View 1: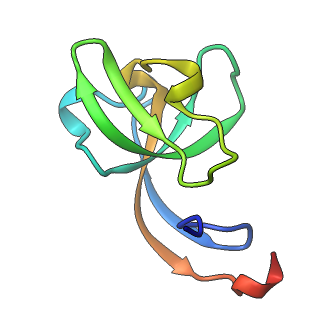
View 2: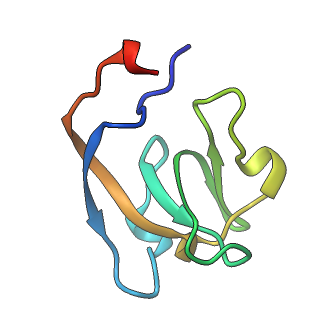
Length: 95
């Protein structure tokens, strides 16, 4: 399965406050931009697959990607933005 987004895609997102998202603003299947506490300044695009008391569980659509399988549960404030739509789609053969 091909990743939903590839380098060159232009995404339109809604940034949350400086503190990140609140759990109530997130839903399963939302695509979010994450910044982990352990890696400030590094952003990941992941899909939320589960929300529980422990936090959010995110999956990468890239089989080689890193996600909650490695990280475990993430606190909701790790979600810094929510994907709304793709403005420009890059050519798939450019990869």
